[in-house]
Length: 271
Image (cartoon, rainbow, N blue to C red; front, side, top):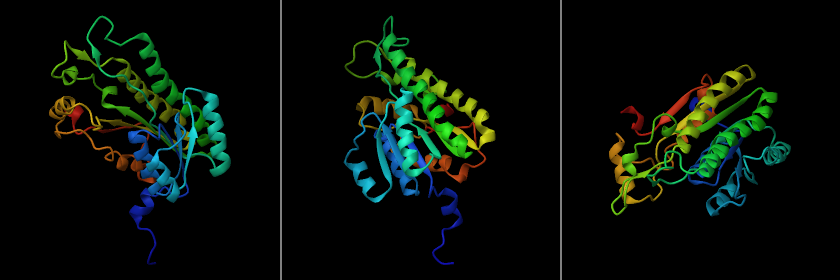
């Protein structure tokens, strides 16, 4: 019949599904929220900020998007928001574990292998423990429904060590190094993904990772140049270039995919 959705539209459709995006007010998180909403999902944004920016407010006027002030390192905060979400829309069927923190490159020195202890502990608490808690709290609801897709956002630095050469810049005195904590946290996310994929496979929950390359965000010109020269495609990613992968992993288009790591990095890890 005329007007019926095509096979591809049905395959990638998220109509009737409830999605949670952590860190949904950040540069990439907001992109994921928009992509999921455009595909028909009801989207809950979990973020410390709680209050949306102008772009997300506008999106919420035309799509079903709700905002929750959530600390992903606090189980009670996660449970409270998810209880409210489930009462309004039903159990979440999609979880994007996007929230994460990082620290900038630091001058090389005695402590620069991992940065300060406080930085190390903070990064691991948010990037690993936070993901673990989100998977526990929301995965429990998915398990009861026997259906769900969890997408854990990782990084090329979860697979390979940082190329410290790209952090040098004109005018800087001495060598600057990216601390170890971020890469260690993203490697942990990859193994947690594999663990949960096998743990929940018989309950209809798929768990996959999406490992991203660097995204342009008005960084110093010297860094953008260094990064681009290191990437086979010769540039950093645009902020919208991961949306297709998010829709693929969230939808029935990836229905036989679990425990996998989808790498989109402009070829960074290919050499």
